[in-house]
Length: 213
Image 1 (cartoon, one colour):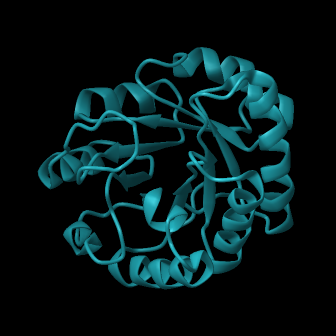
Image 2 (cartoon, helix red, strand yellow):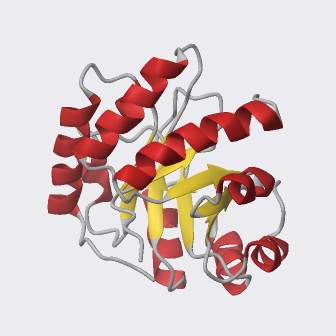
């Protein structure tokens, strides 16, 4: 089972490794429920080495580690799963490689993509961006109406993503999502532990917390 309530996506840009790993540990202590390691520019070797270090932390707190894009890295470190964007390996092929027990997430910006991802075996969807983001990922705004349409169209859990923080997630009220993804708000926090704790508390007052197989 995995809990998507507070989904932390990492960003190691311009941060030394020790500080990066410390932020992850502090976020784990604070209550993040799942972590995605996103490294767009690292070599395979460097990505694997970092993923192994991160996994030691996430294992310590029994938090699933998801690898962004890279199925080879996920296999190499025995991560809990992968998250696949629209330009990554198709979900059916990924499922054949990873097996039935690994988590596969998919990005969906519309109902058609969401249904396709579900039918091909995705375990959850990341939907957004709800707001503009400060990460280098290309942003296309997803309306709350579209988010609700996707939620109502699929049976798998959905995380909202994109510029969301503790001060603006009220927009997600009554959307029936399962969690909130965040990157910069934790990475840039002066106190990742306390921020994660407060953010999770806010999420749990706003949405119904559920666990999914």
